[in-house]
Amino acid sequence: MILGTIITPSETAAYLRTLPAIRERCGRVHELGKTGQLQYFEYHPEKEIDVAKFCVDLMKRDYAEDFANINPHGRWRHLDSGVERVRPLIAKWAAQPNPPDLKEQARRTIDLFVVSVLLDAGAGNAWKYTEPNTGLTFSRSEGLGVASVHMFESGLFSSDPDQPYRVDAAGLENVTPDKTAAAMQVSNSNPMVGIDGRASLLFNLSKALKASPEFFGVDGRPGNLVDFLEVESKLEDDTRVVPIAALWQALVDGLNPIWPSRISLGGVSLGDVWPCPSFKASIANPVEGDDLVPFHKLTMWLTYSLVEVLEKNLKWRIYGLEDMTGLPEYRNGGLLVDFGVLTLKPDALPSDPKSGLPHAPPSHPAIVEWRAMTVIELDRIADLIRSELGLSDTQLSLAQVLEGATWKGGREIAKIKRPETGGPPIEIESDGTVF
Image (cartoon, rainbow, N blue to C red; front, side, top):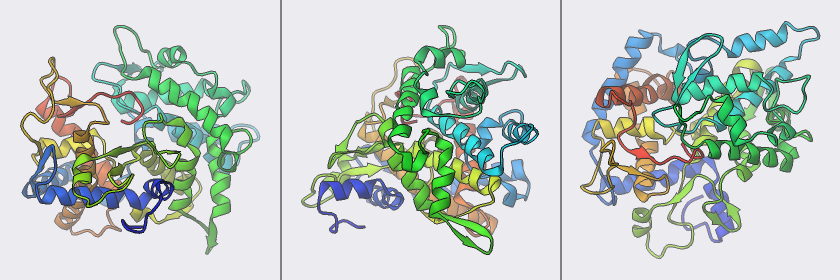
């Protein structure tokens, strides 16, 4: 759907919640960057080659020439930080008397991945998690991932004492900020950003699961997505083929009640969708919703993560993945700022008195511009990387570029430029529900 065919606010809202809308709206912001019409940023495309070369060097360092075996970007990587945890957990289930079948193993894994992704928002620079059984210490996304595995194994999210390895609506109703903080080792000396927001997301997840039995079953379980997707799929040469649009619809519609109601349109709460004033200024006779740019970052992150479970655990094939975008978050976006592809205009944002870095909440139009530019730049950087390596997009997917190059690159350049914290070049005032 393109501008001019959308008439009512409800139609606009429906469009803004589709996968293609993300790249289309971000692409129009990117066009403004090309002509110097952004309000907060200057765009320097000549610097993109520096980013691509940095990323290629990282890929060669970490994978030699074995680029085909780069894992896709997804939560699985973080859950396996330091040591493998996911496959040993699945093996443990398979070794039980009367073991669960492959579909039930996938349901349990999806249960874990859903809560883990929802807990994966910026934790701040100070928080750490020490794993009890290994003594390994992790921070940021890895720490949140490892902590979530142990929360899952402890049965924190299950209503059935005899079956801890599940997440269901009744179990999530009992999750509180205090229980979440204790499980994540939060204290005065180990503070975490957004702990209340995280607990609220899990409580709201319980309501969402109960409200959408068509996706999550009568017991309100994330893993029941397997059964919904099986109905939406078809068999081709004994392989089950699932449209990405079906998974996206289930996540966008089924999980919509969990997100804070920041912006609504046509009576629909939009989630991670924000107004962009520079975009609005470029539109002649804008109507309601024309200035909104969708990102759906956590839903996209969750989709990437669940695609991997469906492909690896069930051997299903997902089609339509070309509609997936890169993740507009501070690692990918920070890579662009640290290499000068995007530069803030003078005095665009206030500086934090402690760090001296520019800072803003996710709703600030500067952050909206930054994120929109990041979505399209990730496509462009991926193409440059493939060109440098002589690979096609089927030989090196965007999910592999995110994992092996840009997300990692954003983290590594941050460590070089800001060794004390390793934080991003623009600080986000996170509430635990966007980043």
